Length: 293
Image (cartoon, rainbow, N blue to C red; front, top):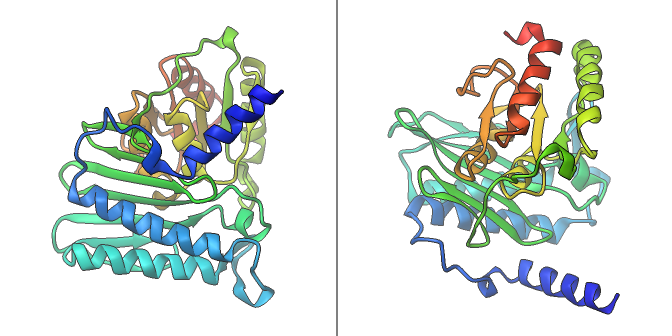
């Protein structure tokens, strides 16, 4: 037991102090990645200050069972300030309404607080997601930051994916090893509930466990580093998945929509996994969600 406690203390201490982690396999980051990291950490500092301290006046309904807090807005404003100071010609697409057309052919896609409901309930699973999409090259940079653990996931197209400076890869477990698969539940769009539950039943049969963290960005980041073996969700927006998609791909995984298309921006569905899990979940999705074709 003492050894377990010591190991946990070591892990948490190093997770909260990423400068102590070895960065032996991480090349010099690009300016874009450094700016995204700075913006994510700045937003993370705002969330840590307000976590567990929200008042009812700081929580506002957006639509049915969907909320925004003053912290979401403050994080978005800080991220926009940092990015625009460095790249004034780049566009912005943010969940809480900040938009700016690109003059450079590049757009930053931002979820300033992914997992707002968790944050409201003082459930410590939420993240900041920042991605850069080039009109010609697609997704080129991605950052997902989990403030509670001080875990910074980063990716650059063609250069790999990293967690606090250490190279990460998707899991290589086989089904017999016990897959842990993540998903997102339909909480306000019920017209596909039956299809979702039917697919969930099939996934349960091939996995050792199912997890629903409440942050798609974290689900994808955890798939990239091998904590999860796969992730699927049907209704998502670009700010939910953009950074995470690049993380998984750069970690050696596969990401498509429910039809198998690589261009995940055309539809609102995501399947991410390794060479074992992705084809299996894709077959299930095609079976249960024929309307996605």
